[in-house]
Length: 226
Image 1 (tube, rainbow, N blue to C red):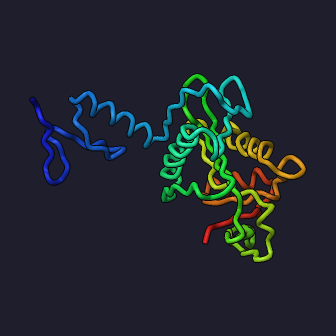
Image 2 (tube, one colour):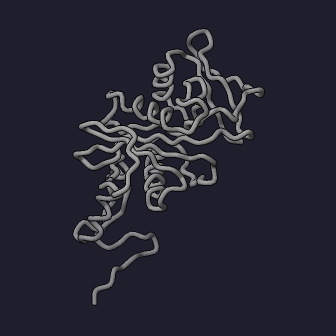
Image 3 (cartoon, rainbow, N blue to C red):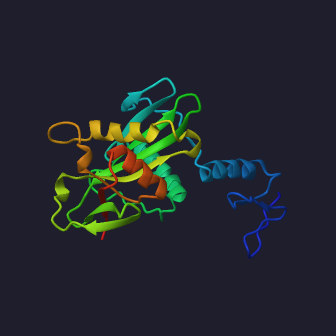
């Protein structure tokens, strides 16, 4: 019976390390090669999704659909949202943390119908009274600064914790569709969540450009946990 040999450095005989995803595997081992393909695709933001029998579809187009997943939905459904979040955080450079205790969490997944892959993601949550709400704006039209708003009414705000679109699917208006779906489907007195009641988190340079375009102005609300 053959036995896999592992040395103290966790490098296996005949193994190699992928230059892109850094995964160490044995190319001649079928199971190893399969696992590497899965890890590699995940590293590049390729997330397979073959669908569920009961999907909460909130937007449907020829090329893609948007599915809403709530924290108290089927455990397997929310686990998929968590799996996507882990990939998204790596892409955004955010330290992934399973913070399922945040209240009011909902995920919106954009799924490519033909590829059967997740190509966009938005995570919404309630803004807590312990969170710090601020106004992000451009000072002198150039330098972006953040001004804390201690009197902000956080209870009426909806936190947009993540906005992500896979690079190959960008510049198609997908991020706008996702945030629009959030605003239309989020439980909110009076119907659609006003743009002014959204607060963003984890904003990258590209995210700042999207926010300015989406809100139609250079200043908008942001929040951070304490």
